[in-house]
Length: 312
Image 1 (cartoon, rainbow, N blue to C red):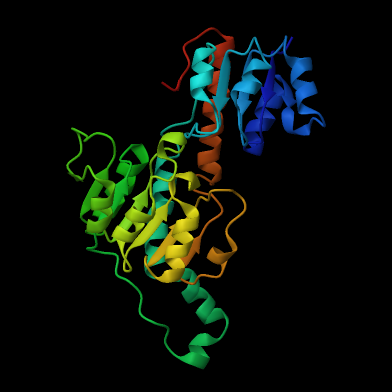
Image 2 (cartoon, one colour; image 1 turned 30 degrees about the horizontal axis):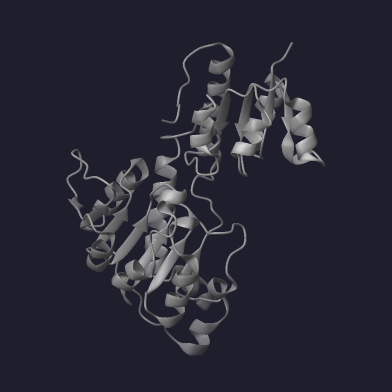
């Protein structure tokens, strides 16, 4: 007899196919009445696979026998990890396997925002090159200073790529790393002031909400560019939009937003902003690897073996 699992949100289709074949799966998003569905499943669910959407304390309380939440993603800000710990529920994530993919996109956004590649593409396509002549100059990348907010796995991978462009690297986080040779700047505003590009690569969640505020963005300055591949919540988005409109910051490359998939209309009209639909890890290779960690953590749980990637 197959074990039963709850799937709280959609994830990579091929991962869901494997889970469907291995377990009796209950897809919460398909239930017309989710509270009723949770109540029905409550006695039988010991493990959940978490995709898109929140997994809060109320959901945990509705599943008193729940002991594992296997998250599809490295960030766990959509899961109330503190509540899970208090209830004896383990949480796993998918670290490492998406590091290089996200770092690649991060550097792509640095180049695309600095060289205004999206605008330049439109400039060619709409005939402006023919009708208006050469487009305005753009900004240099090589040799410019990159300030990284959050020098974790992804931040380090970004720094490695930026080194190839001859970029001096600064970083800011709670504590200085003993294993990093980059310059540590304890004050985020000061780092922004010293940087040509501000790269946001720290975890999301309440502790970092709107950490990149007006003071930080103004310190980055009218020639500075902010790039965010972390979570939309880390930047004070309305303030960023206003400062981009004012020209108080020079541009932005954004893969994440505060209220996805809804993006502020003002950003859609800006030629000095490059937008992506939260696709940092969105390649078949990486999503397959992420899904495999979800699959393997569930298998380890039901086999009473140590979890592979437990959070905390």
